[in-house]
Length: 183
Ligand SMILES: [Zn+2]
Image 1 (tube, rainbow, N blue to C red):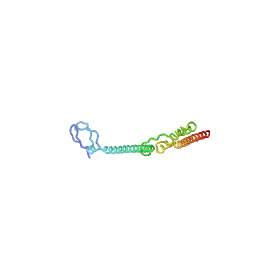
Image 2 (image 1 turned 30 degrees about the horizontal axis):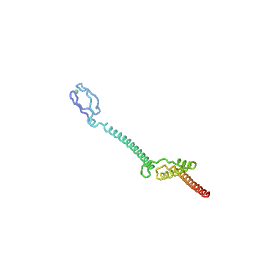
Image 3 (image 1 turned 30 degrees about the vertical axis):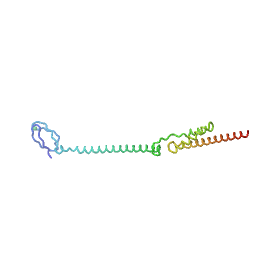
Image 4 (image 1 turned 90 degrees about the vertical axis):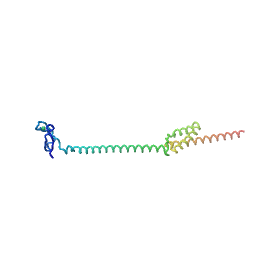
């Protein structure tokens, strides 16, 4: 399809081949004229669809990257939620927000033993503490890794207390017996 155009200076009409598009020529009036591109090309330059599809590919690539990033973000959030749920389950076995307090197994055991050597009142305290702490462990309110120590302290405290009470009674009865015999 030949290109048709007019000289901007003298309005003389030209018809040239497609291959002349973009080239410069001198008109008979002396004006340098640039041959315009064919009408079809001017209406729809071939670079437009190419760049449009390139843009689309670029957009798709960016969308894919964004989608992957969003998926990673979602997975990370899910992991964090699972972690939080696990922690909550550990602290709240009955759906209640209960913070587990550390156990006092060592203290209970030491008090019970001191009661044996120093004052039976300490054993009574150890027995009570141990009993209360074991109940808290059963209720899930206390760290139950100290269950062994606490149980040992409770039993020693109980035995020491009971032995003291028995020996006190025995001593009292013995004294009374002695007193009655001496009379
Ligand atoms: Zn001209």
